[in-house]
View 1 (cartoon, helix red, strand yellow):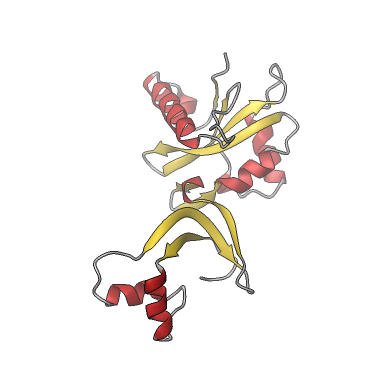
View 2 (view 1 turned 30 degrees about the horizontal axis):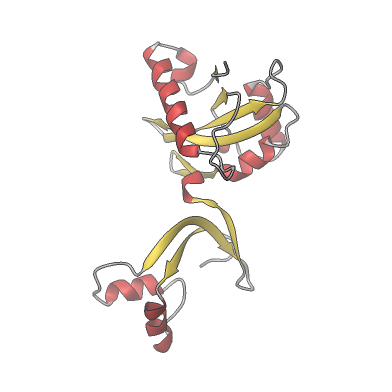
Length: 194
């Protein structure tokens, strides 16, 4: 694993690892190639769904989830940094960033925001300016803002991003069918608050 670059985390069966270590062949870069060359029919690992980096000392740091990546026109956008930055905006009580389908680019980013003050929601432009000032690259900026009263969460408090993806994709479909030119371009605000 290259250091300090996110990779998908997989757990390898101890018997397979022991086999490759015994032959002096174990490295995270080579184990899969060696396994595939061995003629076995299944990959001996379990993908955790986590993205992680490994530093020079071998310490692993989980940086996000593979589903927390939006692939926009071939660029992988990690939503975690965008969410962390938006969470510091004074007008934002809670935030999640999810991808929504796009025919040309594959996916685009949508910031789903719970405003800190119900009657004073931050504008799309304010949030984009805030992100740019925080060093977020232009290609990674959300292209839509979706306002809601509360983020859907599990019993343990984890945001249900799958539900948000469905809601955002459905809003996109309805907007395009209605001929909303801004939503067709991928820009705009959709307020779903009651």
